[in-house]
Length: 291
Image 1 (cartoon, rainbow, N blue to C red):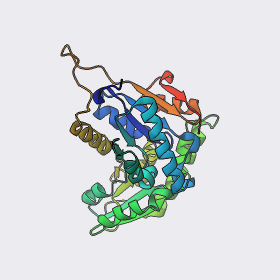
Image 2: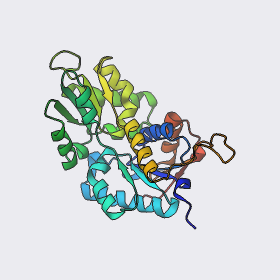
Image 3: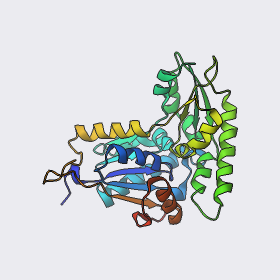
Image 4: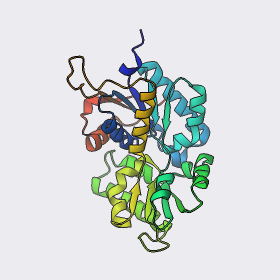
């Protein structure tokens, strides 16, 4: 017998560990919900190396696995590349599954930029997509977007949780890539012509925010989409009357939701990332075959 919608978990997936940044925001917004997270790290990164057809196939396969094995009530596609390549096909193929995608925060960036010059860091798969181009065109009337494809940055962040790469060497590699790509965008600051707003168009890049902040300076606004995606997820579940209750039957606050994480890559890497960024114990994580 299938559980009622409110009792079922929310599925979240990414090409790797980057979507953990979205899961952070989801847990904050929806603390009583259960989450099933899948990191497709055995096939990462999507944005630098994989074509659109591959990303579409993996997105559908993962959605179907989450439905079959965990009976999810909604799916958050916590990957900009997968959203750009596959979310429309996903919704057409599984119309009864609410699917919430992520896309670069160009709209809020255009609204908040004072110099009307916005930088965007994203994967090649995202910036080369028709979906991204439509988004940029929609918000280009009064804003100039400097867009940079960041080959290798998602991979470097992914590898930062894998052994045996030393932590200092890994951090130095991430910072060097961040310096290369922010440098290619142009000057940052508050003067006319400067980039005063930086959009992180890949969920992995949130985990490089400290390095990016050091490079662009304290005055530049850095935007990601985690909080907005979490609010949208709440809205969709509310409309579907599928939110987990915030109070138990006795009137006390409901218990925090359960979280299970799976990976098609190295189990130790996911465990390290979950502990570092979500403070979750290793037993929350499990490995899956890549297929």
